[in-house]
Length: 309
Ligand code: MRU
Image (cartoon, rainbow, N blue to C red; front, side):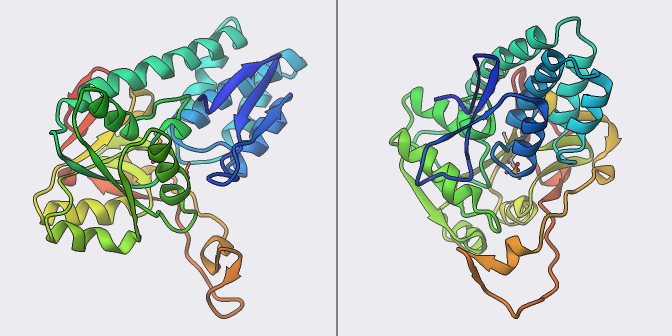
């Protein structure tokens, strides 16, 4: 299963808004469609956004649109995952937009397997691993970063149990990560976001592995809630790993200079279509947070496990 594919000069995307109940696809035949798909979360997750953006540039090229203009528009789709900017700039600097996008598509699959290989080395037989949000196949072309580590450990013969934070407000842990693990018959349990500290105190979590939207000087930006998990893990002396490709690194800036996306308040006001607070309640809804580097055990990359920068 591929999260995204280039088919008949169109970008084919799994519609992640419909999971876990329905596996259906959206087809983008122009670059504006790709921007809409990134904005409305048909496709999400840093590497998947990056490769989709690269195909968006390829579509703009096929349409005969000025690529500098398309690049600016595509870059404005979401602000936090650095892969989006990295991918657009890489296509802009290339001689052949489609060839470059196809190369990045292939690279993403190979990169995730390399991350998995290195990550599996720090996973022990019998581990219960907590993950937050979805850093799985659905966040990449396939296989995943954090969930790729889990897949690789399982394929190396280790018995792994997975615990997924539900990941309010959009529930990517519940709807996407749980679904992915179930597809592969990897034992998985869903918990409310607020339960991980308690489970750690009970000895029920051995390691944490999450993904990243941006790694810069001083720490890691990932889905909101990651920081709280890292604090709880530090308190309980539980290893906290971030699995991410080098395309997620932004070596030039301090992590505190990252723009953290603020999303629509209705994501918090409503749960399963029902309002859960008084009408008109003011909401703060940051999509990501910052985990400082002192809380991170290691970053699992395609070239090995490294210290945070
Ligand atoms: O808002 P999303 O669903 O795009 O957020 C995704 C995450 O935070 C992932 O953990 C991150 O992009 C890493 S994906 C390999």
